[in-house]
Image (cartoon, rainbow over all chains, first blue to last red):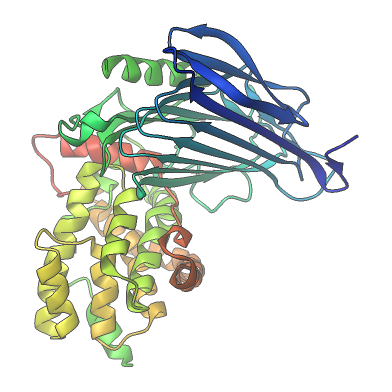
Length: 255
Length: 224
């Protein structure tokens, strides 16, 4: 089978969203190979909707997935996933990688709202998500990490999230957890035994003139203005359900 | 280079205002997450591998001559909490004042002119080390040590923890401090070729969230 190597599976998906000139959004590129399959679903107004379907299980050890999405000027794209992504241990040695590259042009909008990433026991996954936004771009980006299935010791997960607006990095954060991660990851400074952690980044040009005030969202979550036209919600919760509740509430509160 | 200059810079009594900050320990104690020496040790270990590593890499990069403006922006991007960004700049301003008086240099004067509102403390720490003739390794060691000594000292006051227990925590962390400082210097050297993106970005969600919670208290013992 194509894309399967001795070291693991290669998967690549590409999405390009373009304004169709009639107030809607076309998807001139929508393809996936290997385990990542992006599918167009119903559109809502000007927005094109894509669902990423995992056609195989994984990522497994040694796999390498990449997903590129580009939203061109004036287009609106919403990307979700059909199910949670489950990182599992594999036959191949070494860590799995999942690299997501997002580009949003002036006057374009991207909602990047995949389901949770679950780090199953024995897995070893490195995820990077990098969003490059033009000065006039809008974006909502959510990432949720769940450490282990119910009652399970998690695998190793390293996740780096970088957001750039007009060439300037407004957020660069990496979270490493699970067995083999640097010490203290489960301690009182980092996760304190909680098993779900998430980030929600909202970028809007108008935040440059009217920044949002920082506020707490319960005991272990906060909404803060970044050093740029963006806000970040950081939430740590006992489980995926309560984490999603916190992030949804924060997004609704931004209007 | 002078080994004694490192002791001057790393001394907790160096007049740079660090004693007023708990490094997140005050919030962690109030939340009931730090209650004794073992939980303090885990707190410090987590802070070391996140905020400590990032601070050490920024400081080492500053010693190596990276542009302070780029490092300041890199520190901003790695510090989502506005309370922590403000604390980092305030500490940077105070350290810069002390460093300019201690190791007068044209480079430190230029930084003071360029950043009237202050730049992040680890960047200034690196520039101060440079002015004192110290190496990137020295600045990194200084930064990793500060990342744990601040919370340890604060917890002695916050919990009336036995100071001997706090010193024991720091001593047990020492080999890890060395390793993190080495990683930081390695990353700083990589950043000299590849740019600030190569600097580590390790984050601690509860430190970030706790800092915002702490900043909203009407009364607190420490500034951060």
